[in-house]
View 1 (cartoon, rainbow, N blue to C red):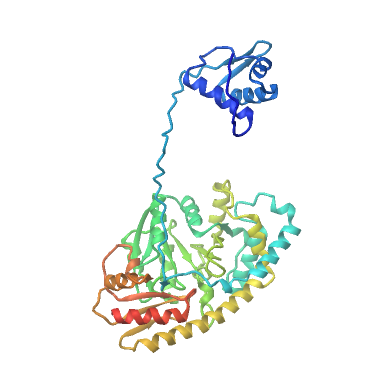
View 2 (cartoon, one colour; view 1 turned 90 degrees about the vertical axis):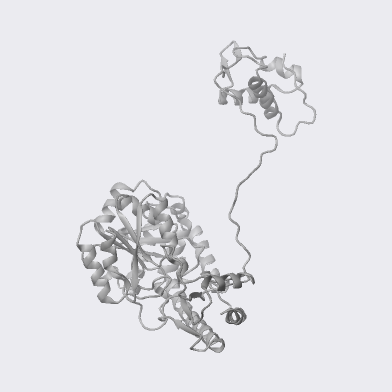
Length: 463
């Protein structure tokens, strides 16, 4: 008869019985085929209820350690092929999670100020969504995203970017990184993808992690060099023509048509247009996107709400040419939309009720005033001979070109001694060439002008 010590048992009794029997089986104390005590006799011998033994036996049966024969009883199953591996008594969790280092001041941070997010409006719309859309919220979202959000985005693109887009051309996803992965599956891993150099290095990492060939094309004063695309035999050109990162170049219309002509040379060629901060052109009308002049369905337009609302709102979208949209629904519709329906309906309401347009207009004024203040702060500290400001009234960053013989790495190292972070254009060279262009990036979306003054004074001492 099996007898166990039930003193000081922590947790349910049935779980304790289950663990004791399981351990005896694994240790070989209960051999294959041996009959276990009946529930009643087992319970009586150990002073517990029969339901406790029943629950323990049921759990052992479900995991395959024992089996029952009707009207005969319970028997130990054959687990001779099972090799028990003992867990170390003190396991070392040697998991190296990247730790963000403490930063006192960051010239390159792209976060937004807390006060600039419309929390009260967003909270009210979220409450309305939960109250009025109980049924829709618990339905599985279509693979491209809920129609209301795609419709709202199409209307926004029509009024703000001059784009004629059907909602079914729009695919919504949690972050552009996810959408890039879908595009690779849609366009094929056998293609040569080409990014701008200098450019957003994460793109290179994403393409390489998806096992595709990724190359780079150089820039001139008008943007990506089309001849470089031909030299590397690119099939897909991934560019940001409205406001290039990090140089800030805006591609003129003649280069745009040259780029479209390149794409039209072969049926397999496409252009991925990343329009990530087009909303923030501070003077004049926004530059029309490349997609709006594409007559041959060669441009895949991508944008995100991470820049216009907050970096933590991981909602992005792409606009596929009609034939690619059909291919997506034919081949990839089994993918689920990765954005919560709660957030999708709330964002749709935020756009349709005009709050998004008001937010953009308010932020343009705010960033315009802030930009002017920061530029004045720079001019109060540096003369025109010491520092040239490279900007084009677009986006939320510009470049500082310093006249110095000190190396870029030395400047970064000395600043970091004070926990001040700064990056250069050369840091985004995809070919990893060491250069001393002395062009430093200043992103002012989350910058405190008062703290900037102290950081710039220290920077001046270094250069």
